[in-house]
Amino acid sequence: MGFTVDRELFNQFPELCFGLIVARQVDNEGESPALQELLAGQVEATHRELAGGNVRQHPLIAPWREAFRKLDYNPNRFPPSIEALAKRIAKKAQFPFINKVVDLVNSLSLKYMLPMGAHDLDRLQGDMQVRFTTGGEVFTPFGQEETELVEAGEVVYTDDEEICTRRWVWRQGERSKVTPRSKTILFPIDGFYNISEEQVRAAREELAALLVEHVGAKVSSYWLDKDHPAVEFS
Image (cartoon, rainbow, N blue to C red; front, top):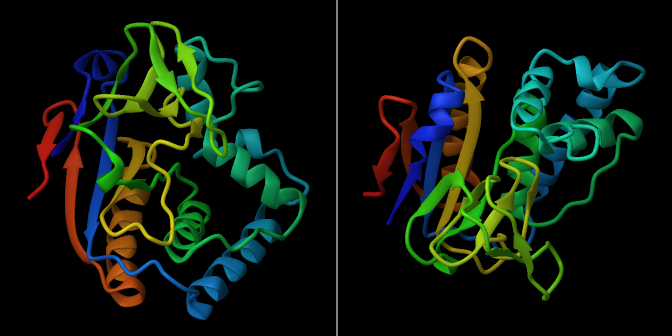
């Protein structure tokens, strides 16, 4: 199993880069007061930073809005996931605890102001791919059972059978969501050279350390860009 990025995406965004973590033997059952405290503290810190400001103009969010516009996605209708999360926290310093892994990802996503995903690899078929749809692929929205068809030309995270995340980093679905029973998890962190590379690398390293410390995971780290668009997980 591996992770591949369509070269056409790099043709449009040559500065694109991905930090990846694969975590195995994850213990995501139960609660972690330490991770809940981490999330609560980061939510409060982010609220203090962003309240009353224009989240859309944040230097790590504005490039995502521009990327979406380049792909003809209206970022006001389909905001990048980090923008939606940051806006929510800017309005109110509250966010629900979900499970240990998701709480950790939300904490670091806010800390580094990056879109970060978490996908249950045991629920996937074939490689995880970031590519343009060819038309007719299906997507199951989060919390639903009924699928929807996706037209050609949309950037998605997908496996061989079903789309996992629509409009690049807009919205993850049911296909690969992380639950307390998830044991093998892929964490992609999307960014851009000369904009957020430093944050992507730092988030990847901190995520790896915290996964070992708090959920007992065995972790492997990877890096993808236009010169290295694919990786096989060891």
